[in-house]
Length: 372
Image (tube, rainbow, N blue to C red; front, side, top):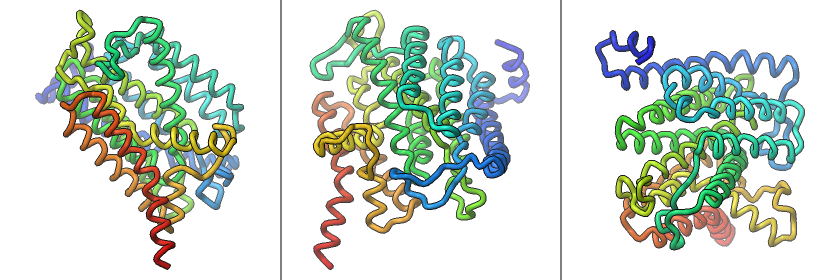
């Protein structure tokens, strides 16, 4: 036990709960009081997000809110969840690399290959350096234990896809932040149920929740001078942390002595993780398929994302974000309720409901036009 643990113990509360409460308070305060200064500097130096093809806003808005989110995580996690940095030695270094490339992209726009290179470096640090890998598919697609090489390859692909997928849903006010909070709440509760071994991960989830809540106060502000986006800095950091927590979540159910038998008897753990992160997964896959079918580059900008479709229904940013998040919370609830089904059947159900959500706005729009 370190000096901080001894100091906290004087409160008389269980150490974990004190850490949880203090991490929330400090994380919220750091982000909440950092953002006004970031907005002021951004406006003075004209460090603003210009409306573009993908944009759903019409005015220039500061987009460096991710710096405040990093400040909260970078300060609170090493203090209140320091065990994570003992177990995963390259975690903090990865966050710093993503901060650097994110800020650069938000200010001067970094070329895509440079962003991808940074993500590959971070992925190598985590997968090879910190051994954050998926080691079993639990019978998904008939696959159980996988070799080290396949594990590294699959885990690396998952990291890179999820980082970029989360970045792509950051298109309207409140969506990426609200979804990050929901994911962190679900992962946090899951870790809490798994016992003391997972408590540092619960604290990390709480830090993310508090920081993003403070950010949303400004992101959802009706007063234009207070408004800010998290930018690539925030979306890269949160996307990375969600990928990290998802892989760790899956691994907690693996018995290392016998990877074919889940440690906590949740055979559907990989599908539950997919359900929690279903929005960026299906939204990204959907737009890529549409672009390929239209013979366009998968990286070409367009407005085929779910949030763009809801805006066509004349919904506000807030309503669109609320409806999207509610729909995918239902997907998570269904996946959890059916968690004891055959893992492959559950996967088909989750992905089917997820993709249906991508086309539900199109169906509503067509019905609306037919009734006019």
